[in-house]
Amino acid sequence: MLVYVVRVTKIELRNIEQWYAIKFCVKLGESAKETFDKIVKVFGDEAMSRAQVFRWHKEFKNGREGVEDELRSGRAVEVRTDNNVQRMRALVRQDMRLTIRMLSDELNINRETVRKILIKDLSMKKLCAKMYDPETKRQSQQWLSPGSARPKKARMSKSKVKTIMICFFDSNGLVHKEFFPPGQTVNQQFYIEVLERLRKRIIRVRPEIANIWILHHDNAPCHRAFSVTQFLTSKNIRVFPQPPYSPDMSLCDFFLFPRIKQVVKGTHFDSVKDIQTSVTRVLQELPVNDIQKSYENWKKRWTQCVAAQGE
Picture 1 (cartoon, rainbow, N blue to C red):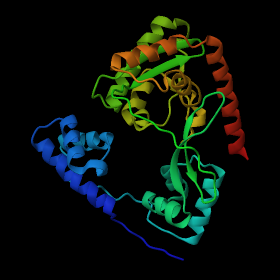
Picture 2 (picture 1 turned 90 degrees about the horizontal axis):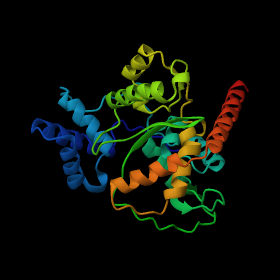
Picture 3 (picture 1 turned 90 degrees about the vertical axis):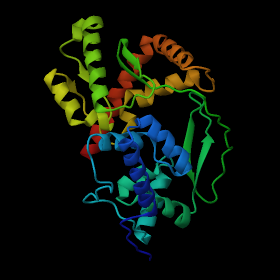
Picture 4 (picture 1 turned 30 degrees about the vertical axis):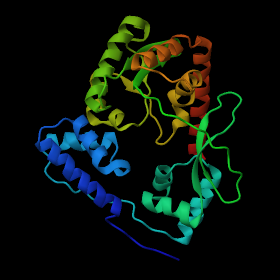
């Protein structure tokens, strides 16, 4: 049995270097985008994500001085034991789509340790494979264990352009959609502005439900922010609860996004406008019957979820 505990990993030390670099760029008056571009140029594949760089840039800009990340109480530590190895093997065999983050949350183990257990102790490899599905032909990621049939590797090329969309719909169809401005991050302030535009839109296009509609969104950080909760409460907007780590409960995850991807997948776009035009057309052409069926499916999934919780 091998057990070891590490409080500051190499990854964290590398992050500290980048935090110092971000703080330096803020002192020079550079924007979040300029800072992110420089971080990527210097650190390459080890660079922090765009969302992390933007978050730290904002914190330093708002007056934060400390660089080291606070060690949170109850933080998962790096522990490799025979028991954890067996538990992880059982979880992965039950669902090959589990991510390192999901396994870390489930077992309360440091993510780096999860990765080591999967690769070193279980000899598993993460593959991007094209799994044939007659209805959606969805691309999935899975953990491949020794002795498993190796799926045929799919060649995927990245598009040169991308855009972010947020949309709201009910059983009668699309209610409101927005494409984010270039460089806009998904933060709580921007989400509040979106919700205010949604509220006014509902009053115009769905006056019969203007005072009784219920919002269902997932547990993204900007959705759970205190300022967002305050706004929803002030406008008397009720929120349907979303269980943590339950994409199967979200209409967007199991219906809307797969439907859009089914149409536009494999298409390379030359401009952001082309993407937006194509996605808008898919949303407008969604049959109302299909949307209503998705709501019936949504109800069934919630019933199953409640029943499972009661067992």
